[in-house]
Every structure is written in structure tokens, then in C-alpha cells.
Image 1 (tube, rainbow, N blue to C red):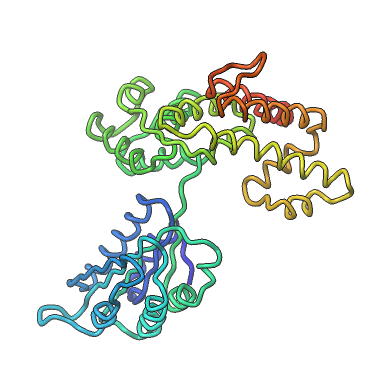
Image 2 (image 1 turned 180 degrees about the vertical axis):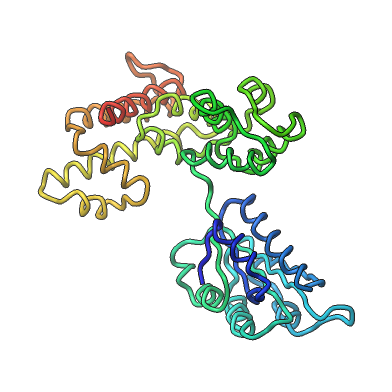
Length: 355
């Protein structure tokens, strides 16, 4: 059975009726995965699961016999136990697949052992595999996803509220939360630490702009593939900030260029397919445009003309040469400056559409 992060507290609050014997946490947000696991452990301890053993699956040659034996063995000092299985790679191997299916089946009706399986983000093929399906069908499965940039200010406000703090209402409060989000984007664990810092520095109650600005460090971490999201959203301030951050983090210029150029090429391919009579949804599927990127394309494409796309394609070709060391007339010789110019060209085209 699937469970969301938002549903977990209510599920555990009803745990006086008994916890499920099997929980699986998977996703690529370490803070939320850690908090979910801690909450499950705390609820289990409150119900008498006093013993805990942990196993980390390191490679395909891991010996699963100890894990399989753990579920059926209790010490003289405990009648309930937690067995944790960490699989950092998300790939248990052939023996592990069989062991996990056995563990999932054995969990049914087992009120003496609570098994907690911890996994990274899994692709679709893995989530439909036999071993993961067995875990999901015989227990509770919780997927933890990163907090997207648009939702980050609200997440910060909720975390502040948990420690009795809040920003001022109105425009100043929104500006404060946006500033906070800009400082911690892409680094939720550090965001959590910066929020806790505010509790140490200031009493409960209202926080002003000056207090937040003076306390919160710039700990943002940028993902080159999130750059595409900012560009297509027509957000030049965020684009410039992300490019500065990627440069400071030592990201490869060629990877940044590839991300921008692939967006431009994909826009042109879909536009050409539409011109050939393909409906937009079909053209997007054929070009493997899904999720948030699909929604951005749907917004941008109907009003993006061919001349603009051709101009962007030519600019992408020019910048490809610059990041590889070639000089181009009327363009910066510095690769990052050229990338910024290309990114803002595309961003302005998307911003015009958004307007």
C-alpha cells in the first residue's frame, strides 16, 4: 500500500491499532527519508519494539542469510524488534530480490518483527519489478520526493511554525520567504539546519526581514537540469543565480550547454511535428517530453514562432564552439558569459510567451 509523506503522521497516530510489519521508504531527499524513518522507529519503540538491528547491502555478493535469520530470532531481553535493510544502490541483485520477496511474504501476520527497507530513488522499471512489488503489496510504501522550488517558501513557513516562529504577513513576509528559499534551494538538509538556527538565535514569534537576512547563509545547491525549468518558466533572475551557482560549484560548461541546447532542439522538433499535422500531446509523447517539462512546453510552444527557434538554434551552435575554445564574432570569448547570453535569450522568449 502506498503512503505519502503528508499521510505518514496520521497513519502513525493511529498506530495504537498496531503498526504494519513492513515499511519501505524510497526517494532521493535524504532529510525527508530520515525524518520518515525516525518517525516510524519512534512509533515502533512506543509499542515495545525495543531491539534494533541494521544491515547495509553493499554489492551483489552481500550475504542475505543473516537478514533472513534476523526476522525469526529475538534476544532474551526483547519480544519485539526492528530489522532495517539499507540498499544504497537500489539494486539488491538476484539473491536479494528473492530474499526481499521472502521477507515481504513472511511479514504477513508477524507482530514481533517490524522490517524497515530504505532505498534511494527508483526508476519505473524497478518499481514494477517483482521484489519491490512484493514489498509494496505486503506493507506500506512511502516515496519521498524533493521539495520543488515553487513549494519551498511554504515548506519553510511550515517548518518555522513547528518551532513557534513566523515571518511577517503581507508582501514583506513573502519577500522574506522567497529570499530564504533562494538561499537554500536544492539543499533541504541545510535548509532544515538554517531554520533550526533561527530558533536558537531568536525567540518564538514574528521574524523580520533583517533577522532572516542576517542569519541565513547561502547554502543553495543547483542542479543543471533544474536550469531548464527556470529558463522555460521565463525567470531571468533565477536563471542568472543558478548559472552563477553552477559555475561556482565547478559544473562543466559543456553539460550546461547540452541542457540548454537540448531544450531548444526539442522545442524545434515538437514545433516541426505540429506543423506536419501532429497534435501537440502526440508530438510531446513522440519526443519523450513528460512531467513538468511537458507542461512548460505546452505553455510555450503555441506562441513560439519558427524564426525565433531558428535564431536560438544558431545561437546554441555558436555557443557550442565557444565552450570548446573557439572564438566567435560578436560573442563573449568566456564560456560562462556565452552560456548566460544563450540562457537569457531562451528565457526572454519564454517570458514573452508567459506575458
